[in-house]
Length: 181
Image (cartoon, rainbow, N blue to C red):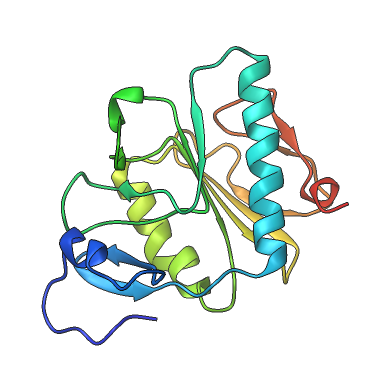
Protein backbone atom coordinates (compact mmCIF):
# COMPACT_ATOMS: atom_id res chain seq x y z
CA UNK A 1 0.00 0.00 0.00
CA UNK A 2 1.40 3.40 -0.94
CA UNK A 3 2.05 5.92 1.78
CA UNK A 4 0.47 9.34 1.48
CA UNK A 5 2.52 11.17 -1.12
CA UNK A 6 4.08 14.35 0.27
CA UNK A 7 6.65 14.73 -2.48
CA UNK A 8 9.02 12.61 -4.48
CA UNK A 9 10.76 10.26 -2.04
CA UNK A 10 14.34 9.11 -2.50
CA UNK A 11 16.60 6.37 -1.19
CA UNK A 12 17.56 8.80 1.58
CA UNK A 13 13.98 8.50 2.88
CA UNK A 14 14.23 4.69 2.82
CA UNK A 15 17.31 4.82 5.04
CA UNK A 16 15.56 7.32 7.37
CA UNK A 17 12.66 4.93 8.14
CA UNK A 18 12.31 3.88 11.78
CA UNK A 19 14.21 0.74 12.81
CA UNK A 20 12.35 -2.38 11.67
CA UNK A 21 10.08 -0.61 9.18
CA UNK A 22 10.56 -1.74 5.59
CA UNK A 23 9.34 -0.11 2.41
CA UNK A 24 10.12 -0.11 -1.27
CA UNK A 25 10.49 2.93 -3.49
CA UNK A 26 9.20 2.97 -7.05
CA UNK A 27 9.39 6.11 -9.13
CA UNK A 28 9.63 8.22 -5.98
CA UNK A 29 6.62 6.66 -4.25
CA UNK A 30 7.00 4.70 -0.99
CA UNK A 31 5.23 1.35 -0.49
CA UNK A 32 5.11 -0.21 2.98
CA UNK A 33 6.03 -3.87 3.29
CA UNK A 34 4.07 -6.16 5.60
CA UNK A 35 5.83 -8.93 7.54
CA UNK A 36 5.88 -12.17 5.52
CA UNK A 37 3.99 -15.32 6.47
CA UNK A 38 5.70 -18.62 7.25
CA UNK A 39 5.09 -20.21 3.80
CA UNK A 40 6.65 -17.13 2.23
CA UNK A 41 9.81 -17.56 4.29
CA UNK A 42 9.92 -21.31 3.69
CA UNK A 43 9.73 -20.81 -0.08
CA UNK A 44 12.44 -18.15 -0.03
CA UNK A 45 14.72 -20.38 2.02
CA UNK A 46 14.18 -23.50 -0.11
CA UNK A 47 14.45 -21.64 -3.42
CA UNK A 48 17.60 -19.89 -2.27
CA UNK A 49 19.14 -23.24 -1.26
CA UNK A 50 18.09 -24.94 -4.50
CA UNK A 51 19.37 -22.19 -6.79
CA UNK A 52 22.59 -21.68 -4.82
CA UNK A 53 23.31 -25.43 -4.82
CA UNK A 54 22.72 -25.52 -8.58
CA UNK A 55 25.06 -22.57 -9.23
CA UNK A 56 27.72 -24.06 -6.96
CA UNK A 57 27.47 -27.47 -8.65
CA UNK A 58 28.14 -25.81 -12.02
CA UNK A 59 30.94 -23.65 -10.58
CA UNK A 60 28.90 -20.64 -11.68
CA UNK A 61 29.62 -17.06 -10.76
CA UNK A 62 26.07 -15.82 -10.15
CA UNK A 63 25.07 -14.98 -6.58
CA UNK A 64 21.73 -15.46 -4.82
CA UNK A 65 20.47 -12.86 -2.34
CA UNK A 66 17.26 -13.29 -0.34
CA UNK A 67 15.37 -10.28 1.02
CA UNK A 68 16.07 -7.98 2.61
CA UNK A 69 18.59 -7.10 -0.07
CA UNK A 70 18.70 -3.66 -1.68
CA UNK A 71 18.23 -3.43 -5.43
CA UNK A 72 18.60 0.01 -6.96
CA UNK A 73 16.82 -0.94 -10.17
CA UNK A 74 17.79 1.93 -12.39
CA UNK A 75 20.89 2.93 -10.42
CA UNK A 76 19.03 6.10 -9.43
CA UNK A 77 17.73 7.44 -6.13
CA UNK A 78 13.98 7.05 -6.74
CA UNK A 79 13.79 3.26 -7.26
CA UNK A 80 14.67 0.86 -4.45
CA UNK A 81 13.17 -2.63 -4.18
CA UNK A 82 13.80 -5.70 -2.07
CA UNK A 83 12.85 -8.71 -4.22
CA UNK A 84 12.25 -11.92 -2.31
CA UNK A 85 15.16 -13.43 -4.28
CA UNK A 86 17.67 -11.68 -6.50
CA UNK A 87 20.08 -13.65 -8.66
CA UNK A 88 22.91 -11.48 -9.95
CA UNK A 89 25.50 -12.64 -12.47
CA UNK A 90 27.31 -9.36 -13.13
CA UNK A 91 29.45 -8.77 -10.05
CA UNK A 92 30.18 -5.21 -11.22
CA UNK A 93 26.60 -4.37 -10.18
CA UNK A 94 27.30 -5.35 -6.57
CA UNK A 95 28.65 -3.08 -3.86
CA UNK A 96 28.39 -3.00 -0.07
CA UNK A 97 24.85 -1.56 -0.26
CA UNK A 98 23.33 -4.07 -2.70
CA UNK A 99 22.78 -4.29 -6.44
CA UNK A 100 23.00 -1.25 -8.72
CA UNK A 101 20.94 -2.12 -11.76
CA UNK A 102 18.76 -5.06 -12.70
CA UNK A 103 19.38 -8.55 -11.29
CA UNK A 104 19.39 -11.30 -13.91
CA UNK A 105 16.57 -13.22 -12.22
CA UNK A 106 14.02 -11.97 -9.70
CA UNK A 107 11.57 -14.09 -7.71
CA UNK A 108 8.65 -12.57 -5.81
CA UNK A 109 6.30 -14.53 -3.56
CA UNK A 110 2.84 -13.00 -3.61
CA UNK A 111 0.80 -12.15 -0.56
CA UNK A 112 -2.62 -10.48 -0.66
CA UNK A 113 -0.99 -7.14 0.20
CA UNK A 114 1.63 -7.35 -2.61
CA UNK A 115 -0.45 -8.84 -5.43
CA UNK A 116 -1.05 -5.56 -7.28
CA UNK A 117 2.61 -4.62 -6.98
CA UNK A 118 4.04 -7.99 -8.04
CA UNK A 119 1.74 -8.59 -11.03
CA UNK A 120 1.58 -4.98 -12.18
CA UNK A 121 4.03 -2.30 -11.14
CA UNK A 122 7.01 -4.58 -10.49
CA UNK A 123 6.39 -6.64 -13.63
CA UNK A 124 6.71 -3.45 -15.69
CA UNK A 125 9.65 -2.08 -13.68
CA UNK A 126 11.64 -5.34 -13.79
CA UNK A 127 11.11 -5.76 -17.51
CA UNK A 128 12.03 -2.18 -18.36
CA UNK A 129 15.08 -2.23 -16.04
CA UNK A 130 16.55 -5.28 -17.84
CA UNK A 131 15.73 -8.25 -15.59
CA UNK A 132 16.08 -11.37 -17.77
CA UNK A 133 13.75 -13.71 -15.85
CA UNK A 134 10.94 -12.96 -13.38
CA UNK A 135 8.93 -15.47 -11.34
CA UNK A 136 5.81 -14.62 -9.38
CA UNK A 137 4.95 -17.42 -6.97
CA UNK A 138 1.41 -17.40 -5.59
CA UNK A 139 1.04 -19.76 -2.60
CA UNK A 140 -2.72 -19.16 -2.35
CA UNK A 141 -3.46 -20.20 -5.97
CA UNK A 142 -0.48 -22.59 -6.09
CA UNK A 143 0.68 -21.01 -9.35
CA UNK A 144 3.96 -19.67 -10.71
CA UNK A 145 3.96 -17.03 -13.44
CA UNK A 146 7.21 -17.11 -15.41
CA UNK A 147 8.28 -14.14 -17.51
CA UNK A 148 11.11 -14.88 -19.92
CA UNK A 149 12.12 -11.36 -20.87
CA UNK A 150 15.02 -12.61 -23.07
CA UNK A 151 13.17 -14.73 -25.60
CA UNK A 152 9.60 -15.11 -24.29
CA UNK A 153 9.86 -18.89 -24.99
CA UNK A 154 9.20 -20.01 -21.40
CA UNK A 155 6.72 -17.30 -20.43
CA UNK A 156 3.60 -18.87 -18.98
CA UNK A 157 1.71 -19.94 -15.90
CA UNK A 158 2.56 -23.17 -14.12
CA UNK A 159 1.16 -25.03 -11.13
CA UNK A 160 3.18 -25.99 -8.07
CA UNK A 161 3.07 -29.58 -9.40
CA UNK A 162 4.72 -28.71 -12.73
CA UNK A 163 8.45 -29.02 -13.22
CA UNK A 164 9.62 -25.55 -14.22
CA UNK A 165 12.78 -25.00 -16.24
CA UNK A 166 14.62 -21.77 -15.51
CA UNK A 167 14.96 -19.36 -18.41
CA UNK A 168 18.57 -18.41 -17.72
CA UNK A 169 19.66 -21.95 -16.75
CA UNK A 170 18.39 -24.53 -19.25
CA UNK A 171 19.15 -27.48 -16.99
CA UNK A 172 17.78 -26.11 -13.69
CA UNK A 173 14.41 -27.74 -13.00
CA UNK A 174 12.33 -26.73 -9.99
CA UNK A 175 9.06 -28.22 -8.79
CA UNK A 176 7.64 -25.88 -6.13
CA UNK A 177 5.51 -28.66 -4.56
CA UNK A 178 8.73 -30.53 -3.73
CA UNK A 179 10.06 -27.53 -1.82
CA UNK A 180 7.07 -27.53 0.51
CA UNK A 181 7.43 -31.14 1.71
